[in-house]
Length: 283
Image 1 (tube, helix red, strand yellow):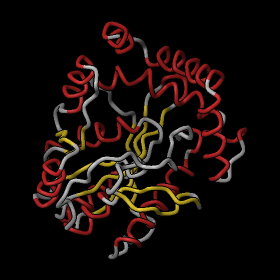
Image 2 (cartoon, one colour):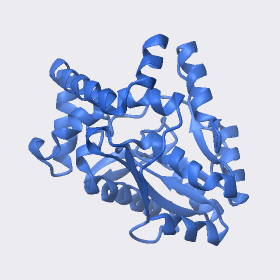
Image 3 (cartoon, one colour):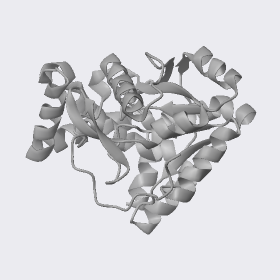
C-alpha cells in the first residue's frame, strides 16, 4: 500500500482523477449501503440523482488525489474571495476557517497556508492518527507541513487551537463531520437533525475570531483546483443553539454552490460514536 500510495503521488493529475472516477463508480456499483446513503442524503437536500450523479466520480477522485496532496506541494490555480480573508486578518481576532466535505477540502487549508501563513503564522487543524503505522507517519508528515500545525483531537489540541486564535492566527475545521458522543448537538442539516460539533462555534464565540467559509473546487480534466472564500451569509448568533444553526446553514450554502462535488455518501445523519468528551473544552 505504501508503494501504491507513492505511485499515485507522481501520476499526472488528469490520470489520477480518471482512475479515481472509475473507482468511485465501482464503489457505487458494489456497495448497496453506499448507494442508499448517497441517494437518501442527496434527496434530503432536494436533489435528484441526475443532478448529483457526478459526485459519484468525485468521491473517487478525492481518494486518488490524496497521495499528491500529502506527498507533494500542490498549488491552486486561483483564489476567489481573498479580500474576505484579508479583512478577517485586519480585525486581529484570528480566523476560524470552515469547509464541508466538498471538493478537495484537504487543499483548502494547504492553499490558505501557502498564501497567508508566512505573514500570519500557521493554521492549526485537528488531527486523528490512522491505525496503520505507515499511514499514521505519512499523515503526520503531510499535515504538519510548512504553514500548518496539526494538533491531536484531545483537550490539549483544543487548547492549542484557542491559544492560536488568541494570538491572532487561524484554525481550520470540517463542521459537517460527526463528532464523538458528548461533543455535539442535534441541529437541522438540510431539514433533518444531524449531530453537529459544537467546537467550531465555541472557538468563534469564546475568542471573537472571524468565521470564514472556504471551499476548494476541482477543475475538469485534471486542470487543478480553485479556492473560494466568503463571509458567513449572516452574522454568527451569540448563543450556542443559534450559532450551530447558522454554521449548518452556511455549510448548506456552500454545498449548493457545487453539489456535484459533495460527499453525499458520508454518514452525516449517523449516531455519534461513543467516546469520552474532552472535559473542560467548553468556555
